[in-house]
Length: 93
Image 1: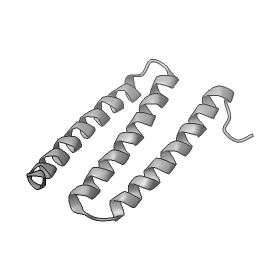
Image 2: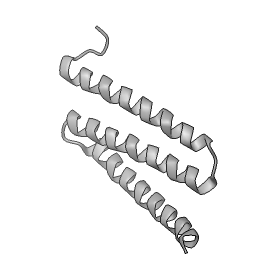
Image 3: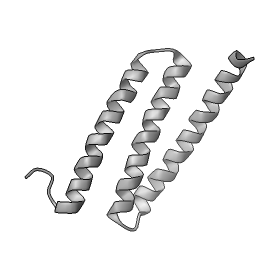
């Protein structure tokens, strides 16, 4: 029974993640402040990472799991850089 549920649940998760990324993209464009935009970019990279993981589960390929790891690392570094830029006005001192 669980083998029959897995493809449907992965498809549902992918649809919800794409819908969430659409909502985040709307907030990035229409965000009233820079902090709102940065927060939505953070949420968007997390959703992109989860979408890569669900694609990896669906296909069974290891490449997508490595891509998700790279997305997580790059997303964290970009979040730190954007936060530093918003606080000090420069990234590199």
